Image (cartoon, rainbow, N blue to C red):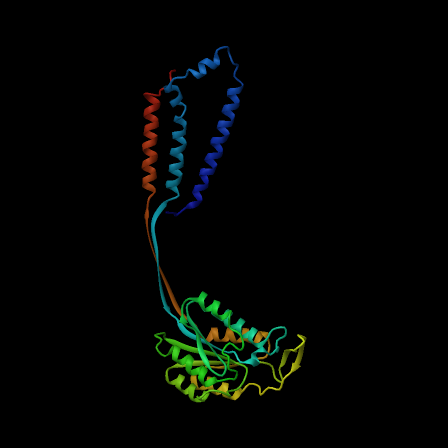
Length: 331
């Protein structure tokens, strides 16, 4: 049940306050009356008729409460929400090679930032289905495309470098694995967000060939290169347990290939050089790939104030009838 004009219900509180004040003053006046000998006996000897007559006033308050409820217009019914959702199916394809441990964003690693981006992006895409593919020298599906965001978020929290066991960067394999997760999707739009910090050096499939396969299936790829220019900084733990920061020679990111992959599929390349870089990439992808959602809300309510008015009317008649017949006071 709901009320069309719930503000009127505050009048019940006002009525309760008035009732309390009247009762308070009535009891005060009763205490001021002189007690005669034998008064207690007379009080205890009241007849049932006299006792019932004292409760007639409560009927009047109940009548007023029922009228106030009726004025607030109680209604029963339902709200039906029809959501027309033309969502997007998205695969987050995350590089888990050893170089993702680089402390480019100290104290955060490249992996820390990539994982944070994936989690925030998933939270922002309320109406889309999302899956996760992780890769290094080989690729595998961590989460198939699903609308269960909690499952995706929980699994993203477990993503870390080295989880695919064999080190390396197989961009072609990562793209094909992601395409296979989307190829049978009925969504109107399908896309892959490929995150990497290196260049293709493993796998049997060339990334450009894999990009053409994705394009032939109508799948768009957004590529994100994460990592600063120059040799990355790593934390090395010696045999004695001491931690040392050292620069390690690295081939860097193959921006040309990532740009070409994006161009072939109609996507875009983003280079992340600082912590805000992922935020900018997320905002731009979110703006370019909007989900078409139409909410239609049907409301159907029936007025129920008549029930309360009839109840108030019946109680009022009962009060009038009793006060003028069985419970009538003597003059």
